Image (tube, helix red, strand yellow):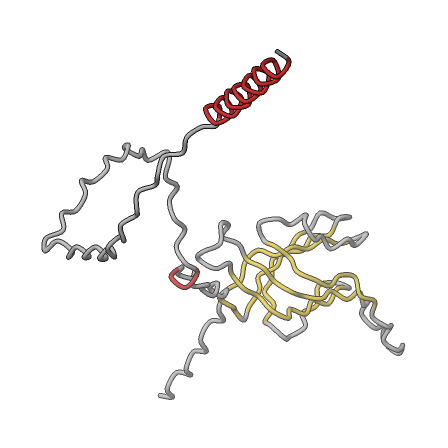
Length: 209
């Protein structure tokens, strides 16, 4: 009886062990066999395409119109700028005789006389020496006569007495159109320029009869 139980226990343990081993094997995932990989053939490089024979130009892009206000005029280069030719002013014509007029402020006596350039001329106690006498040029606005002269105050020498020294009363330019611009400034006499003129040609002597 005891031996039978022992045998049954052994069978039961064997069955239990067999069942356990069978469950363990069924629990593991089955791996599928891998197929052999075939060798890949080398890939040939792609052939380059030839450029087209005729190339079509793209269509032009329409630009917006530009007004004259948007474009400033270009300045010409300095090399092309024409320099203004400075013309020399026309020189004044010079004459050799000045026509003057003097007045005595005390007696109101006046006299008109001529003074050749470079030759002193006396009027009462005044000695006039004209250095230059000229007329305005055609391009000047005013037609005028201008004379540069000196006026010395020198009384006439008395008989038997030495000549008194001269004192300069005026030196500068006188203008016929503006007598008050550079006046003589003498307490007794006044003088101003009338005009400038050319000296009259010397007359030939008459032939003897």
